[in-house]
Length: 130
Image (cartoon, rainbow, N blue to C red):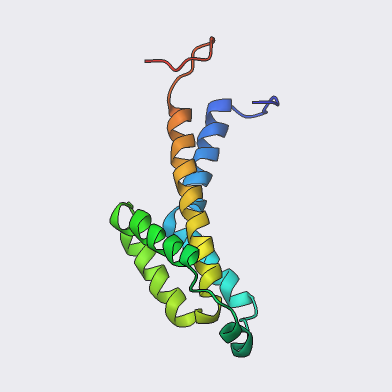
């Protein structure tokens, strides 16, 4: 830590870990994304029809997202539920929804790695303990 906490540092770190687990859980993250999509203005249909969203890169990104988050992911049900909601309720913002889903996956992976690293004791020379 780069500060001196008033409370026990173990208790503080455990609270921080708990907050990270909750805010980056699939369900909580997707709920925040849906709340965001509810509050943003949808793209007008005439603008949407002029955009070319079916590019090779976008289709490849969607396929990779489905592969990683559905086929290989831990939270398949949450992802499919979000994907179907985005495709039906937020069609005009589907690209933004998928971008945010991919970002959420990244946050979840990084959080798992961070929490795992915090659990491992670190020796004074910087190498991980056994």
